View (cartoon, rainbow, N blue to C red):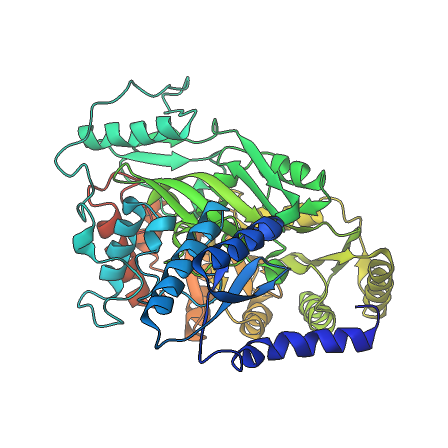
Length: 556
């Protein structure tokens, strides 16, 4: 469009396109697939060729920005021969989308018509997993029976093709100097799990091992399976805003590779040059950018993993929109290696901000610190983050990103407001990283994590700011971490319990973030929803029936 008038006419054509097509035929069927947007020209040409071959009329409607295709087929439903050709065309279009790395549905999901097309995207192992998940949430089959998944009877076995025994191993997995299993490929990882199944010997998946404290530890300390040698980085697809890497790549390496193309993955875990992609996603670790961009699992569009039954799982597609099947990646993000071993992740990338800035302020009045932090976040939602640390004095870390002009304006506006409120400017270096560290309880001691609506989190922090505990608050995300430096500090542990009870009364989700097994048993932190814990146990039993992966972790 050359001007606003041209733009308005284009939008009118887009909005009225389908309705106008209805005047050209008695029946219309609109398809819904999605592909990497860089493949749009070749796939649209193939769709047109397919329509000509089947002798049908098609209006190609699509989203250029996200690769969502909506071929609009014009036909006469009363003509049985033409209706059959339309059905064949639709199946071929879905196959074209999958062959291009895309999905059978970008927006509208799978009902009955596309149920069998699920086999184009997913293996029988993937579909068996989805059936097991469905059975946990809907054991009597009341919710939309017959939709989404191919019938279980059509799969070889709900328990897997190897239900009568696992094949012999190709050889032992490499061991580290500390006796850890060190697979160097996805096949090695699969064989390690199958070997553990044969021997009924549990294993504990890990990345760099820096975030294992975030979930309750296993009592029996099984052998560690480390994914840190899964090191392939790529492919990078900047035209499609996607980057893929194996689980052992560090976040620092991933960001450096994306930055070469002017992009980034909006996740900022602590110790980014050390933590691995697989470990961060498996822990769904808290990051400062969470309030603006979501948690690590929110940036994942596709994933590969090895299940607890030794099957290779594939979830998602290399597209930015996908509504096919259950999003297994969302389930594995935050599962801490208890359901499957993540081997590969594909992230959605964004253009890297032209300019960024970090600010830091401090104030001796903790309550004033909290008020100012809440004020600037609610006044400037375009900020990347606002985080608060309360420990003796109040400290605020602020992150901004965008074009040079907007960042310069934000820095000046917030700095001026801080001075008016009596806050002192600090050197920002290290303050934000310290808060990332504290939000993930990476120091010894005891800590709980509270997740609440942002305003409720503000109330919790304000009420307990003077408790003498260490408090770290991610303002826009409603995340609060409360801790004390030692489990032997009975007063500090009792204070943590008081904060946890208050948060639970406000319907916040509360859980131990760092604590020994004995402390977890002595101090039962109240759960926001006991039913959710029961579902987690049911999922564990359904997806890891032999209790091979980290038994006892998260389901104690």
